[in-house]
Length: 319
Image (cartoon, rainbow, N blue to C red; front, side, top):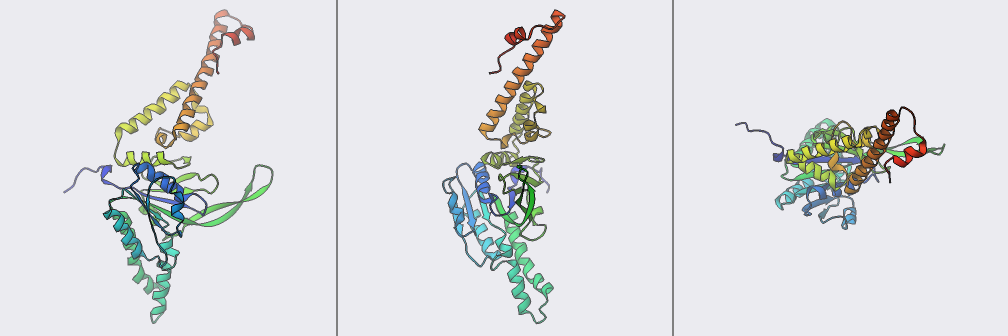
């Protein structure tokens, strides 16, 4: 029997991709904190205990694992996290299940070596079901899942802003099975420079065209989207509308157009301080424009330009 589709039936599947140093673990915890404010967060740590370094950020439980990083070990821990009632599971990182010791690529090599023909095609036929089972475990788990994926690293020579050239580390394809990212609700690429996130796949449509630093508010906005919170979405749109209309032209300010491209879909991703700064900026801009408009009206009313000193004295203060 068919039933009406509702987002509250879904669980988030988020992939954070980036090279070493791009802030994947930190960003994952920040987003998880926004989704689960009470700290019902679990982490599978393949990074030799580095997942514990952020214990001061929020409360979470950790399950460190060492080689072999077989798909089955991941599957068992995913099931344990769901059975324990955690709201969010962070897998840091899923790349080890592919290229790590005991991961899929090593399993394929061993299967090929063990066969009489040494045929890798036969080996893949044997190992692929294990990887498929891992993907199914991630997609079917009754909790939100955030995975981190390492990306192959390359360097690009760019202008450093001082007239010189400098190498910039950039990320390329995620280290996992090709096309795996299409299984996720949301995929974000993180840069080393500034830890800026860019959505490369976004079924939520919250982050299209945006470049931002992920935080707890990112998780809050995702939780609202998953719950189908129409009132929160409407409030976000009205807030943006009020800010833009009150500013009377502030949409031309580059910072604003970067933040709010097209509609108010990303308002929940701003921190309280950023939102306050934006509101203050709009208010100052509004006073400036009102002052300029008052000067023009006085000039028209007198039929001639008034002295600058008189205009300045009559103009509203901008401070």
